[in-house]
Structures are given as C-alpha cells and as structure tokens.
Amino acid sequence: MRIYDFGPSFPRESPLINNVYRALVVILLTLVAVSANPIVPVSAFDPSTLSAVAPSGRLIFAAESGGVWNLFAADANGGAWQRLSANAAPARDPAISPDGKTIAFRSRRDGFWEIYSMPANGGSPMRLTRGMVYSGAPVWSPDNKRLAFESYKHGDLDIWAMNADGTQPVNLTETSEFQDYAPAWSPDGKWIAYTSWQTGTQQIFVVAADCTVGCKAFNVSQNKADDEEPAWSPDGKQLTFVSDRDGQRAIYTADFALAGLKNIKRITFSGWDDQPAWSPDGKWIAFVSARPTRQPLYITSAEGGIPRIVDDSDMYAASVAWAPDATVVLDAPNESAGAPLYQARP
Image 1: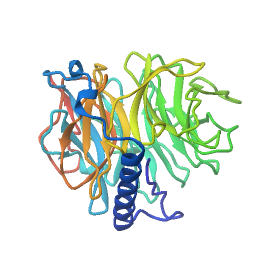
Image 2: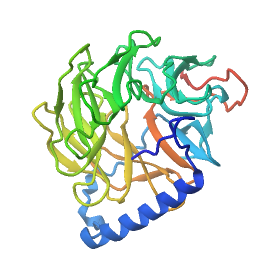
Image 3: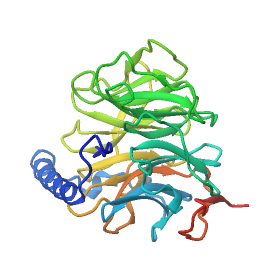
C-alpha cells in the first residue's frame, strides 16, 4: 500500500499524519493477525532456504525522513544508506534501465509529481510527462526503449506507456473506469502487470504491452482478497506480489499463467509487508515492512525463509529496485549537482 502525494491540487503528505496512520494500522493488523493467524514458528520454515551465501548487488529505493523524500542506495547485505544525486530530489519510485545507463523516477521538483529520467553517471534530469497531474511508478521495458507508468492524465488512475524520451504516450487501461496502478513490465516485453480495482478488490491484471487502443486486460489473481504490487521474476515465469488472503499483509510468489496464477506460495510472515522486488539473479526478494515508527528494508530468499534487515534506521523506505547488474557499485557520496548515481564496476 502506498500513500500518495499528488501535488498542489491534492492533499499533501503529512509526516505526522502518516506516522500516526501507519502506527495505528500496524497495531490493529498485528492484533487481528495474532487472533486469526498464530505466529508461524521457526520450525515452519524450510532450513534449506537459508543460504550462507550473501546476496550481491545494490538496492536503489526512495526513503522519507523529516517529511522529505529522496533516492538512496544500500548494499543488499546491510550497512548505512547512501543518498544519491541531489539533482533528483524530491524524488520517489526509482527505476534503473535494464542496460544500467539511465534512471527514471518521479519528482515534484516542478510543482507536480511527474516522471523524469537522468543518466546514471550524473547529469540533469529530463522531464518526460507534462500533464500537470500526478504521474509516477515508472518501469522500463526490457529493451530500454519505453516506460510504463501510472497517471491521472485522463481523470482516473490509469496505466500508460510511452517512449523513453516521453513521446507517444498510450493509455493502456483507458476502457477501465477503476483505479489502475503499479505497473510491472514482463522480461519478455509482452505483458505489463498491474493492480486494479475492477472487481471491487485489488487484483492483479495483465495487458499486452504493444496494445495501442481498446486494450483487453486479464485478471490473473482471481481472488476475493486483495492482491497487488506485482513484480516479475527475471525469467518471467513467476510474479511476486502483496496479498492479505491469509489475514495478514504478506509477500507471495506464484507461477504466471494468463488463465490464472498457479502454485501460490506465501514467503513472508511479518504482518505488514509491501512492495516486493526480485533480485537480478532471481534468488532474493527485497521488500519493506511497516513498523509503528519506521518502515525498514528487508531481503528474503525467493523460496521463503527468515528475512534479513538491510538497515534499521528511523526512515521510511519505499519503491525498492535492484540494480540490473550484481556488479553495480555506488560512487562515493556527493551532494553536488551532477554527482553520479551509481556506476558499473569496470
């Protein structure tokens, strides 16, 4: 679940309200979860899923501290968060292009939340959307040529696709009168998965990525509970997503099929887990998990197991993405304009 800030024409985020809201929700859900679903004992986990091999790669994400959102990076094995280029702030929803050369994100630097991109090795952000309404959650196509995103451009929240330079935007969910959000582009380039309220609950739908008009969407989660925030495995065979189908908000994985998800498996048991992201090697899933006063970043085996906390700071993390190459490293922290976001190891 995400708390939106849509800009001047919508109520702005209040850190105090958000903190109180999150605390109340976590406490309430914890009480409900304990009564309805006893805590899963450690013995319920498969010890074979706990690997002594540490995950490699960088996590790129947004985090809020003191009411300000910025982009950060962290080693998947833990350690201090490092702020990325000051050129992007205030910023959320980072997305690294598959070739590692460009980062897309949403920023309110010009008054409204819009989509921007900038070179990963530093440079000035380029504004890609100009609707003077909320646009966010950009994701890249596998060939680096297009971006999908969510936007209120036509009055309701829809899934859009456009060229990487912002040209030729197409509304992929124009026929839907419901809120559609959180796009995820399949590795083979054929499908865009997203969350929709079409059935009265949040469900995972897919739509053909190359559609231009009258696009047909398919409900692949087909569940009475809420399923949302899909993310593809690197081989495109599975989706990870958030669901409360067992009474707790948790991360699940499932085999993808157009007729409906198969072999659905719950892999986290924290009670309020959100925004999963698959590692490039397919072995790990990063996610955030709300606590009364913070929202830390975790990783867990894609097969399930005991999560590892990446950092236990007092900030709220969100919008997690893995660097596309496990050898990606971060430049030395630098707050100056044009400072590199990250660069590949030679």
